[in-house]
Length: 81
Image 1 (cartoon, helix red, strand yellow):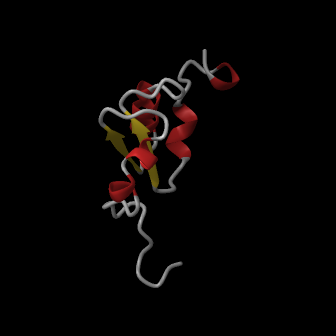
Image 2 (spheres, rainbow, N blue to C red):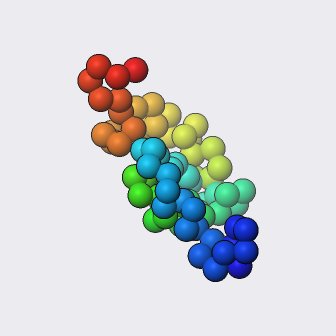
């Protein structure tokens, strides 16, 4: 059973249309890496970046690559803020 007694615990994520970037380290023991994968698989407009040999602070371990993700899903369209 999942949220509110549902049999599909991640079903509510399918209703989130906001572009989402999920970032995690491959050795995270606080938010297990598999949870980031499940989140990305259940959010319709999500991209997952897993940093190798890193943990919960992956974006700090890879600052050069995490400054501006090369993904159109999280960059604003021209004319938007």
